[in-house]
Length: 631
Picture 1 (tube, rainbow, N blue to C red):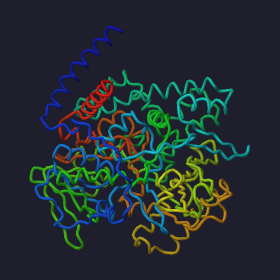
Picture 2 (cartoon, rainbow, N blue to C red; picture 1 turned 135 degrees about the vertical axis):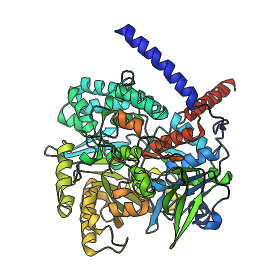
Picture 3 (cartoon, rainbow, N blue to C red; picture 1 turned 90 degrees about the vertical axis):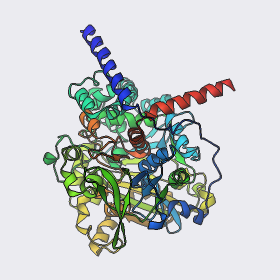
Picture 4 (cartoon, helix red, strand yellow; picture 1 turned 45 degrees about the vertical axis):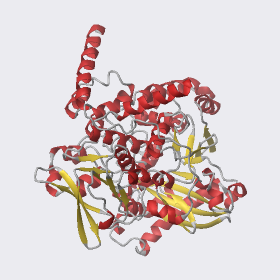
């Protein structure tokens, strides 16, 4: 048996080696040839200076001539792909439908304060990490990251036995010891769990490999489970989180604590259904990616991501777009807002050749040889493609593997007082009202909207103002808090055709029920903030749909359930779309979040340039380290 496996492995290596040479034999310039990192410049706070970068409104006169690439959407997946291509000399135009660039990285103002839309904390931004290195090479080192004190998360469990807190500490040893202090009788289960997390998360490289290999080769490997033999990550992609936790074995309370972070990929929804075909996906309310509906692979990746702590961008999340856009501009490109793309243009051979932009009542055609969509699978395939292209087998196959994720309801709170005055934590709070999240979520989403707020199974609380070291200089004597609640789009969709900001009183009443319930939990958790609240604003899934063009208000992409994360689906959903010259980037290509979008951009740029950009980055990093040792 072992001889057969060794022969099989040798044959695979030979085949993959030949395929690799064919894939990356292009002569495109290397965007990561030199180290471009420099010390961060002082924070730019001048509103007009920032507006010139983030809020350049679309006009025909601002469209660069002789474009190489058009990117639809200015989320970080789109901006990063545009910046990488710009580093090879390509002239790229990024088109954003909103009034400001950044997608889930943009910020907005409310009552004179700034709020994030999607970045609440980031992992693996410590100096020396590969993710930090990649971001530094794209933004020229201009993003400055503040490390959050430990614990970075606290899980609160409210139940019949009272209120319990479970802190999550930075560092492997501290993280494990924190769990063992709370569960001294289950140390063996905790050790087994952490070992699985490390082993599984290390094998995530094979997902990148599946997306780089030609589709027929990747499909063959997944069909016969050839890569799964060598990758614990791919094996764990066929197991639910709940199954793994039950097999440890672990008590119900320990299972709840170990899976506490699952709302991060409920809110940062990804694609997939347990059945791989769209026509048999249930269309009614669903519980989202609770422990029974997501894979252990996704969970292990996320837990490992935060093991060395959490970070927040100095100056707020809009810094990410602010320092990426100039790279695009210097190569002759542009990032233009108020530019809703109406459709993708195809030539007579069915190849993408540009886009149509809606400007008032007019449609403006913009032609270029390559189109990249950062608008997500649903927007791209169901709305932007011409009717005849939506019926292509490859398009239908990919759509059949995904569904919109569970939406969120956001509550934005303006507070009176400084971080010190109000004793605000940098820690994020995950508050649960049931140990059995599968049952609680299933009950919650089955309720009518007017009853749901009284049965919220969980919520997330974050104080972004407390995390940003520059906040008090920019907004003295004031602070903010954000509450996120998983929500069903079904509860709000009857008002989707009413104008934003002018919806009926019934809609406002429903919104108010969620706001009031969330603020009640918030003040119970932080009673000393009673009387310090200046204002409270709620944002429903319809708001998210309007401002981020997110289908059904799922602001972080398609649902991260077991169908989308199955090896077969991961092999099929890739940067090269079934339409020649149309490429995809962003969160739907790999996983959600900032780093997921960044990986989508690397895969997309690799496919366009016919270069292995991961290898280029590794080589650059090795040269930099070697130079440091010499010095």
